[in-house]
Image (cartoon, rainbow, N blue to C red; front, side, top):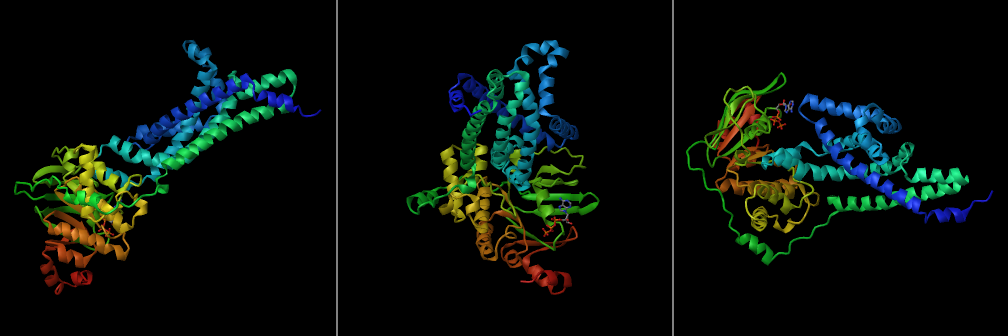
Length: 500
Ligand SMILES: Nc1ncnc2c1ncn2[C@@H]1O[C@H](COP(=O)(O)OP(=O)(O)OP(=O)(O)O)[C@@H](O)[C@H]1O
């Protein structure tokens, strides 16, 4: 029997098929959108600190990924037999089909989101925290935009799977494309001709959405974005003329930051115990010492990125953080945290934001002025670190040294009274170390309170008022650079370590 082309071509204009295609599109889009949103919450639940929430999320994913969709569809559609009150809703095939698809797809999509959330590094959360963003602020401004971009190719792929899975909904009599086709060929037995038309409609839907999703992917892919250099001239001059409202020196005589009897252990490994550290207003203190001596843990304990087990941190004389075993009831307010700026070893710039947007993020979030005021000040800060010319570039378009300079501007834009630097040049190429150290030296000269963990011995000696040498979680030297140079002549350990 010859293939009946005119019949197949006729089906391409069939009202039944176009209506069925519309049903497939509606069902697929509704399933995808709902499952993308619910799946995100399941993925967040999977990372919750609460064990019960974590277990519940894992159970959901395990159960609905194990259950065949066909079984779920028949189960949901027939649920009214056991629960008659659901019959109004679930006897509508579109609604039962949507419910079954959402239950199943949420489990798969949660796994996609989980992978994307893991891919957004811990440093991004920490950068958000030191800018004083709330947990939801961090999710909204930093994590979701990045994880969506990472997840989008897989989410797009899942949409295509959903379109194809809708054909299973024919078992509960939803007039989707396959069911319409079946109705045709059971009357005329032109199975192949009808299935060619069915194929056409599925391929058409998938192709149109695939094209749209790819375009969206390209739009969200900040690594493809290009940037233009700011032209030197009037534009840069306006940044130079800008005068920031710098928070004045703190009027009390209290130390800028003080740690009292600090203790921190990871499991059974004690990093430091009963440690005291005081940094005066305007003082520049460098912390040096061998690898593993606890320098990073100490500096991160000062702003709460590491939770102390014991001890109290005072900022400007006011209790700011208390160790988890401390009886003292200190409630940390996010505003207090803003008095401490931090620069990380790995910069932790937000990759989906330009240099300028990175600097504007904190002040805009905290409503430190109108958008224009915040922008002006951000440009001023970028100019101070010699990065105004690169204001429109994304982090991936900048060298390590340039990224670190933007990170310094980002911290300064919050007007902190103390700046913490955690090995700010360790991740840099030797050629770019100098440009960051020069900016830091200028900051030190301007009277800013700074605590710097560093391996740059020459720099530490040149810019610091005090140098602390840590070993095995203990402060074994605390004094001026001159005293350190003097002492190392008699102390073999110091002379081993302090080589200028
Ligand atoms: N998250 C963690 N879990 C378990 N142990 C940790 C953790 N972070 C640090 N440590 C341990 O705590 C000790 C101090 O680490 P820390 O990073 O503070 O040292 P450091 O002096 O800054 O070293 P480096 O100069 O190499 O950065 C090390 O023994 C390290 O292995």
